[in-house]
Length: 83
Image (cartoon, rainbow, N blue to C red; front, side):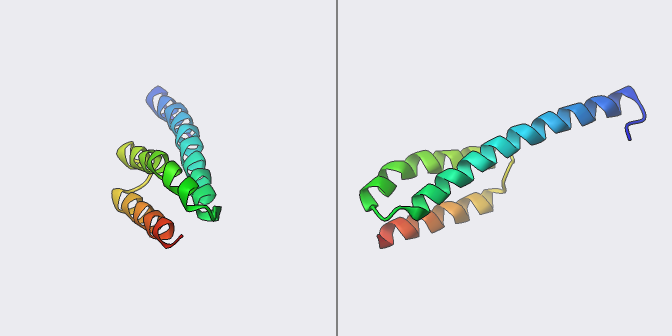
């Protein structure tokens, strides 16, 4: 429990940041899932740059680690190449 004003403010900020990060992470996961579920190579190739940009942004703002972002992008590219 927050014991002073600065701790209460930190809790408020943390909650807002958590919701913000959760929204962007979920949106990116859905975009990744859509690419992985498609069987059309052309559609996957068209959507890949947008999804890669989303993943890079998550890494940049610290929602996911940069190595995880790299692994996600690599795995998606491998999947697209196999189509």
